[in-house]
Image: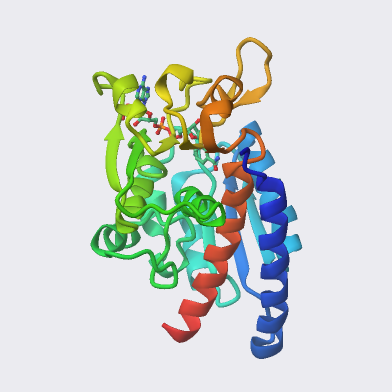
Amino acid sequence: MIFDGKTVAAKILQTLEEENAALRETYGRVPCLGVVLVGEDYGSVRYVASCERNAKRAGLDCKVVRLPENSREEEVLSVIRSLNEDKDVDGILVQMPLPKHISQERIVQTIRPEKDVDGVTDANVSQLWKQRRNDYSLFCVSCTPRSVMRILKEADIDLDGKNAVVIGRSNIVGMPVSKLLMNENATVTVCHSHTKELPAILRKADIIVAAIGKPKFVGADMVREGAVVVDVGINTDPATGKMCGDVDTDAVADRCRLITPVPGGVGQLTICSLMENTMDCFKRLRHG
Ligand SMILES: NC(=O)c1ccc[n+]([C@@H]2O[C@H](COP(=O)([O-])OP(=O)(O)OC[C@H]3O[C@@H](n4cnc5c(N)ncnc54)[C@H](OP(=O)(O)O)[C@@H]3O)[C@@H](O)[C@H]2O)c1
């Protein structure tokens, strides 16, 4: 089965829109996502436009602060501090990558943890590693890992006692998704560029989450019959120039119980998770 991210995302956004209409009734306004975009990186500009479009579909407000590429770090920090203080902004997303002269770490750690919609501040990372269950109302979890878990839930995949293999150990995808899977009682193996015998490890997996950044890296010889494959990768296929994932979907799909396509899979749901995280921040800021 090929996961239909577009249809599932439309359903989620519709539900969020209804919930936001109710929040407006109760609180006099809807949650607001503040996005900081520095420079004009092509992928970032497109992603921020998609945030604005989908916030509208979900019935949320979205305020984008656009800064020039040559902005000084202090100017970016000052924008974040003012969003931290702004009572009409509930979530803050700083679009990455930042220009090289700006410290990503200093920027990220300046975000108020209660408004950290991508779960990147030390406070939220620490919460994730402490919590033994996935309750997203308690703290912010990165959007992409949250969307991976949503896909597995939508597809009714039981994770308890299953072998899950995550390829990639980045702070934004691989590491948080491995903890979320562990919290659902999967037995998790995290692989990376130094892992030996990767194909053999993958062939034992009930669930594979690929977050590598290498086009069509996972081939048919690495996936066992009946596996669930979640492809997080966003790459350009050197042969066609088109977008593709980390998994060779055409070669693998037939043997999978479920596979997520690229485009139309994880990416679709990541934006929904961003909206959900903003709403969770709104609620936490009001009710603790
Ligand atoms: N759909 C979405 O919403 C979404 C969101 C975020 C990212 N992405 C995409 O997901 C992919 C991963 O993103 P990221 O930010 O996690 O990337 P990243 O920070 O570059 O991490 C890549 C990971 O893959 C591992 N890796 C590289 N080559 C490998 C190999 N040959 N065998 C096994 N592991 C290998 C690296 O290992 P080492 O640690 O040893 O270097 C690293 O841990 C990218 O394509 C990105 O565009 C998609």
